[in-house]
Length: 333
Image 1 (cartoon, rainbow, N blue to C red):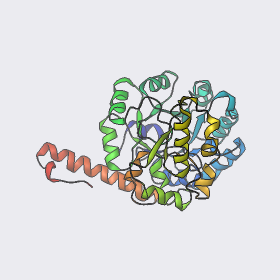
Image 2 (image 1 turned 60 degrees about the horizontal axis):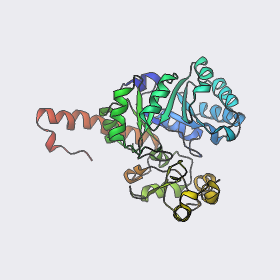
Image 3 (image 1 turned 180 degrees about the horizontal axis):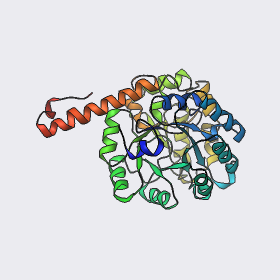
Image 4 (image 1 turned 45 degrees about the vertical axis):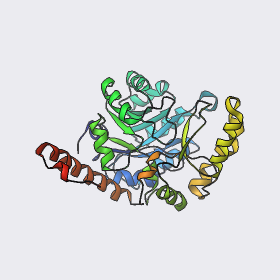
């Protein structure tokens, strides 16, 4: 399948593995890229630029396919040494960077000078248009369904994607609720040129996380995520657990007086405990509503091959069948 995204990043399938804290290591990025998608190393999971350089080199040993690096831009008071991280990316020969968080505008000259294609994660049309104006090559449009930070507008992808298609000139991928061939075909139908999957890629054989995490995703339904930190205007969608329940209780008690310090124990430093040690009640971790569509733990190749086969079946059989009068009798699981 060829789309503007496959052409932009030189990949076989229009599927991107989004950057995820303590998930996007070389093992997962290489597996996704080897399967024809675009694997992404999460830059800031590596505590120093030097460690990121080593992780890029490690991934190079595992794949000769294109892969990228995620850089999340944090508030200035806690900003990592981004120029040094970018230098490690450039020196590592990376040609695709997924940016997230705050605007990457200040760092665009350095990225573009190195010939790097930039795809910025956005939760609204207005932010997507800003990304286009500052020179981003593509946008990852995150609907309200997504894990992590869905923004504050609460617009689901059935509305957000066609609105993005109406406004944007650069290509974009759909993010949030993406899991299978149905997701891909729907995204393409709504104007996207591919899809970004985060949560779904955690439940794969190559994802370097504890088995408890993968099992939790298979067991979860679409009803098992919660939105936290709304009153702080830092909304995050997470998987429910005992500490998340406690956090929500604190939010109710504090109301508008809630401060980040009040929920420190539930949100600070929990990712290593969960992702590496499998302590599933340790605290809040990002998870999309797409957990309701996760029923197994395949390899990345099995997952991507299945997605593409299913997407082709839907397009060629089901959708074309509606035009020739046979689609009503054909069911796609």
